[in-house]
Image 1 (cartoon, rainbow, N blue to C red):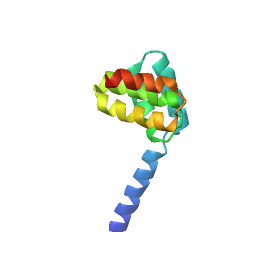
Image 2: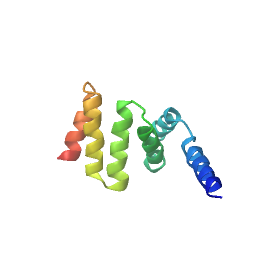
Image 3: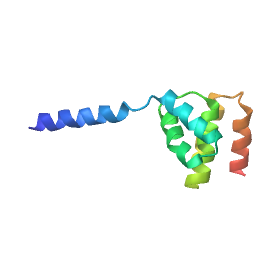
Image 4: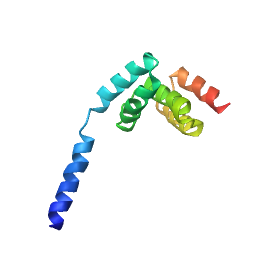
Amino acid sequence: MTRLICFSMAIMIIALGCGIPAEEAAEKGLALYKENRLEEAYPWLKRAYTGGVEKPELALCLAYCKVSIDNDPSGAIGILRDSVLRFPDYAPAYYQLGLISY
């Protein structure tokens, strides 16, 4: 019985992780963001960011949503600091980091 419960829990965890791929989530989130539909874009952007999508504009949009929706500037600063380290040539991340930090 215990094995059955463990097996079913493992299947559920795997099924939850097998949703939309992170790249598709990034595309959907960025498209919604560009349409200024921030509340709809935010969960897609979070999913893409935690899924490991390597796009500097994704981090920028996610940080903006984090400040606008969650009112969490410290979380946005963390995202932008990470973005600056990963993409040192992406100037908008420095600009946004300065705006939020100030």
